Length: 454
Image 1 (spheres, rainbow, N blue to C red):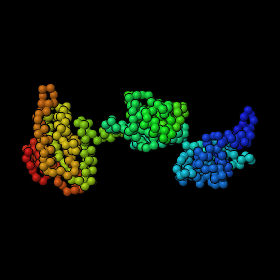
Image 2 (image 1 turned 60 degrees about the vertical axis):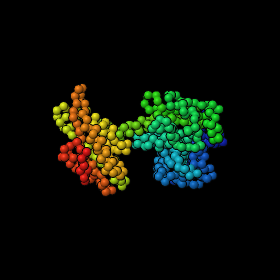
Image 3 (image 1 turned 60 degrees about the horizontal axis):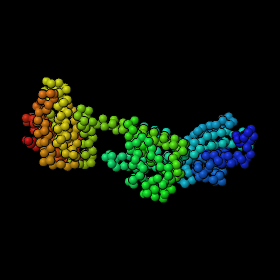
Image 4 (image 1 turned 180 degrees about the horizontal axis):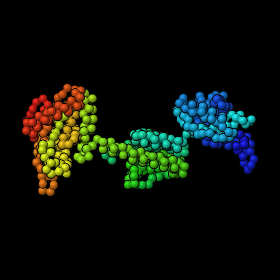
């Protein structure tokens, strides 16, 4: 083993070699082909937390997570069959820390079985670093992991070398007046206390506070209680508009801004956070587009049925109003589809204006719309909605400069059906009531069970 280390052409003395190995940020194990540990040195405390005296004589496989034991067995097999001094690896291996947590390491093998002074396999174990986990987080982002999960994992990963910092990600609420923290760590100073994180939202540069003394009194006192010396707030920007979509707040137990190696890891985390925000926005847009009618902006048939089925599954007795525009085919035939599209857009706006906040309005297809009244509603309530619909759509609609068309609507209502009535059956009742209303002269509504005039 001494041949691996030399200075000015001379091998290091055994004592000097031992000091060199102990100073490395890695653990070095000497094992036989079956994994029995013959010697252990280096930064054992950083990898597993066990002393050399605890490891020697035991088997390396005892400390490896069950799912990764076959990986270690294969690493030892390949290394034992490799050429002298050939380096094999790395293999990503999970192991159990002496305190119980599951951690990861990179394992490398070096064949020294034919060296009479060693007669074994050297296994180099590198402590888990933030970079070991970044690729895993990226894969989870692509797979659609929630933003809260991604941000929580990024903060956890920044506790590993080289960064070894604490912090959280801030996300604005839907009203842009509230902030949520991921993760919620009571011991880490942050909102709702006022602090440097309040200044990061309209800037492209991080806010650096090199000394705890620079901070407002409440934040400084909270930081002192847990031993934090400095804090930096980084904007996380989506795209190039310069506005922060989130913020990464990083606390350090040493003064001054992060050194270069730490800053590089933080920069990687910020880039992943920005990518996660962009990916989530795209996915949300795709999901919304799949449930939205592109012409009117209302929900589409799919979104309506999903909402109706959710009401049915919850055991509620929802009411459905099925709406058909009177005379719409004549508009398309005489004035063209552009005029027809204008009628549909105006009709949609008028329908929105008479809906209750809890009603679900959708364009089912063509000139047909539907309203879902969730929960249990009375005939009187749905009749009032139907009346407003007929009145609103009875006014002429402008389709071009100086040109209007006469419109109107008929409404079929399904209400007071037994709980758990299937969604398609509810729609069927409302549809038949609609055709009954049209048969009676249009511009009116009809209940599925009892006809009623406006």
